[in-house]
Image: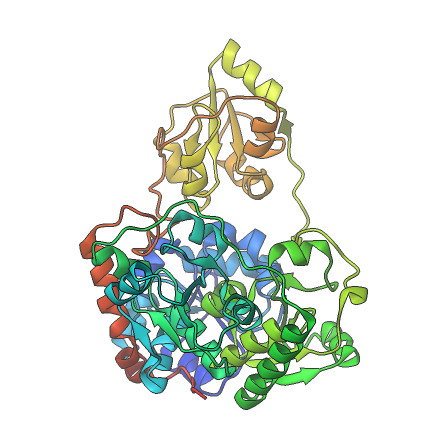
Length: 529
């Protein structure tokens, strides 16, 4: 390791967490090894994607950063890369994951652990009401006065859902449920795939004073499946618009909850000041659904729907101790999301008095990137011609393994970007190498590294695999050529419809133990109103 990269100890990191000083503790392994064991606040920040993630997720270049791995050497490479990108306070965790455990640190499994552990703490503290899968099925069978709302993302809901359930992602619940269940005696049931989002969603409605009886579906779709009950597939029931009276009353209720949690509120002058400040890490999030954000949003705000922001905070805000500013057009979603983030130990503010006239930008969020390297491109037509005429060509696809399985250039090899050298040992030599990914954006940042490893020329596919498909070229599907192990994605036991029963039950058992793990770790700073 370069002498310019220092080591940071477990004691130093723990002290920063306890003092709530800014620190980015980054696990630079791929997602699957990260999910096997990591410190509570270690955000997964793969070495493979540092170039495309750093400026968006680490907005202050002088923020203290500590990177870790489990002895693979990725931490040193990541530290060097972050330094090259202009980060001035980068260290490697001494001993990595094993060193953390040896020093007495608690290790956690799975992903999004801070949010999941917090959800379990909420239930343990507030005794959030819940119904079993069998009880909910009996209500459905009896045509009872019940409304079931699914608090996950809409795509998750479409994959599998409870019969009769309507998609209402978590941050929308307080705003939308009054219209879905206008009679005060209607039973409302909130579900997710496992436990966290149904607990947080149920407690959100209770905290906001919804007059209806509210309960979580205990253990979500996992519990439903383990009970031997049938899930629906491909449903499209979504929340509708609400009237101005509902919007106003929900806004007042959400504001009261946020104030109880210690959420701050700021105006436009403070916002402008903070957006220009370079001595503090501040994240700016628009917590509305993507379609609302894309129709119009505030400059400088990233779209992260509020339910997912609470569920996956470290994925978009890996700097623990940073400041968060949330916005939406009515305040309801921002205040409710902020109330949970404040209880999770974040310094969080809601931007007041904003509306459509302030949303002067449109379209999807565009992450800030380093200067794009100069590369030599090859068009889809040229690549197709080379494949037909010579065949002496190797296509390396740096996309995620999930994207690769869904569709890739015929003959392309799946390659982990951080493992280019090892992957080349499995790929037959060729006279021309072509790099691609979904759009080729990531490929741009690895072309020079590949050129250093080869004597043959290297090209980047213009437009990536999406450009290939748009040009009318065919796609190949499945795990046809894996030059790297597909460890970039941890298979969540609550995803999909084909998980083993043992994995689902094991996941629930793990969630039940998180409160005890929090107590042993002692760095979380959570509280429950």
